[in-house]
Length: 221
Length: 150
Image (cartoon, rainbow over the protein chains, first blue to last red):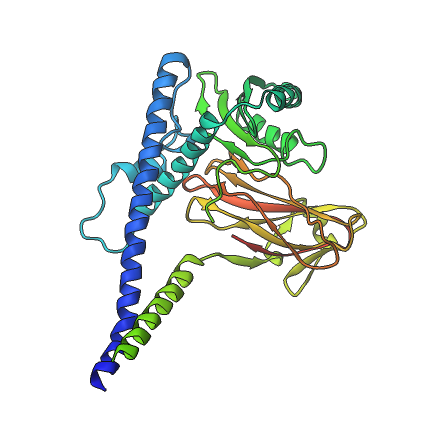
């Protein structure tokens, strides 16, 4: 009877412990994969930008700091990366949380870049969409003193590079092109990559657009 | 003895599965009333009833809510109720950087079934570190939004 009782108590406990161990390991592996993908994408981006761009890269470490980072204090993500983790701290520190958040966001960006790079080209859709989307984005951007620099479409996704006069112009562009109540230029998911700031204060931003009803990357549900 | 061991193992598996479900379901929900009109002058158009927000004005109005986040990837869901196709609801969610540049937009979704509560499922949005997330709905007269889940 005693043995049965011990099994009844120990069995569920062992199950819970085993499950937690399994989840911890799979989470760790997933995080490492994401970090690797983000580092590879960042390396590729930096190499490409160093070769071709006159703009200063400042936002890959802190995507949000496009306009202010040059004159203000370092962004929290940069501080988080620079600061060593507190030794033996069992509770996730603020810096570690910010770093993890930043890693997740960059992993997502890397996954979208990779999805676009891997996507085959549907000539018909790509040509048609490039023309129609390009015309609409160009019209909106010109009215805001900004410009469409490049557009490339594949089978369900497009990569668009815009140069905005400043941050306000980029916000107005989004409001008119993507979130207006009617007559939007595009109604699918859009991901903006971190901005690059030019010496004249303009912002160069790359965005990936997915066809309505599709996702930028496979949903992880 | 063997029967008891089998029982213990099955119990362990069930307990593990329950813990797994509990640890993976960590979504946050808010009633729609937590939001606010896009235009401050439209406050008189919206009425709260049990947390749901109805548009009592004669034209479509936009209602938005900030969704508090502390991590990157989010799948926003919004429950809405449109009485018919001429009085529909269209919603989107947007991620922004800490200095208010756009980081991502879901595109608009509307329900295709009318007269009952419908859940709109949006594609994954990635919020940059220290950035923000919000959702807005264009609500036709007599239509309503009920809750935000993400």
